[in-house]
Length: 219
Image (cartoon, rainbow, N blue to C red; front, top):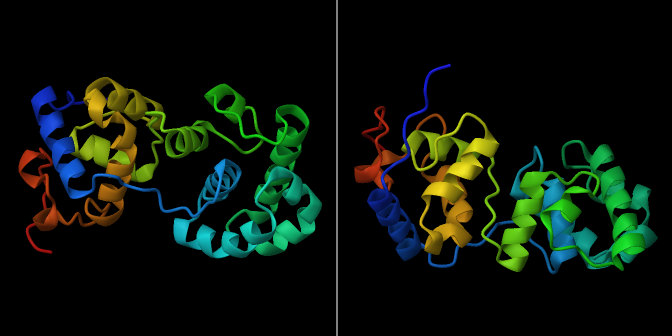
């Protein structure tokens, strides 16, 4: 396996994230939610689905089931009908019902704030746990998805051979003052500017700091 390139130097990292912060001081996730529970459910439903698609399905759902007990009262069949436009909806519905029951029976209906407790819930992996820790409790957790994996490696902000390695690289190399919002800046950059097939390099605010060799020259 070829050796990974070194991460960008500290001074370059600091300048990159200073620019991200200046452009978007308080970046927000795009999944709609009203509390920690609905955020947890929305993130769990978003696996292999778009945020837009999840939001369309959950608006009506969260109007009637915004707590674990209300979700249990709603029932699996009704939940399935609400989320049937989302990929893998049947399995996701089962997991939402299971995690709701665990939250009621073991956590008093409250979403726990530790990564281990979150990951012990059905259908909740490390990325989902990190999103909830970051977005709800403000913990500097790095939820690495395909966008962040691409941007981290392409720009050398956080090179890594898998998502866990990229997560560690962000934690190790991004200056501490930018850690809380790092994953949001990176995911938004990957979603709207540093696209997979044709990155929008002419519109990129960090193009002069990015070592990517195959930069595009036209919008």
